[in-house]
Length: 122
Image (cartoon, rainbow, N blue to C red; front, side):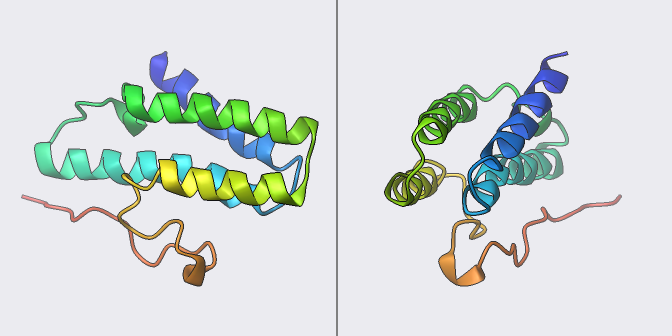
């Protein structure tokens, strides 16, 4: 049940972000991508999911999702270009420690060049 509720939270912020502009939508989706990439890496490396499916047990990522949800709600109640740009910068800073594949690279323009974990089939 915790995994289903976590997925619901990840999807919810993506839909919630669409109320403003496309600019925030990719950043909101990056929570899902961060969770997916690191989940795949854990599975490939350890053969298990110590932080749960899509990192549902990660207190750190959960705290960032709570922070983002709150910030997004504030922005949506009083949207402005200035607040949007500040929010996008803060998301990139706060998720930076998980972003080793360039999710927030401006030059990539919201494309993920490569992110899958190496697979081992024995």
